Length: 114
Image (cartoon, rainbow, N blue to C red; front, side, top):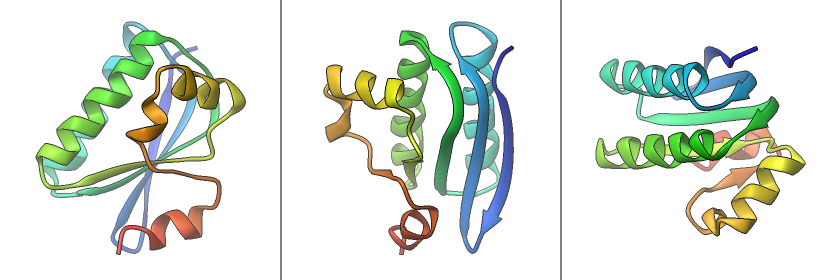
């Protein structure tokens, strides 16, 4: 199974609920397209809920970084919510913990955008 992305609004923050696998090919492409779509619609406060991500590979991590850069360059912010152990470990190993703001609590994450 690839990744399934659904969006919802919490105030002025767009939450992407990601479900499945972010891997080379379909998963990372879907993620890239969703970010472009949101930025195109002028949604610049993006919170990615990763509670239901079962697997992420190096291209998935690359896509997160690329999406972060694209959002930042567009004057927005991209933050991560509810990382699983594997994703936390990968961010630790790759030193990307210093790049992404991560949260365990959705309310706190949403407040952090103001």
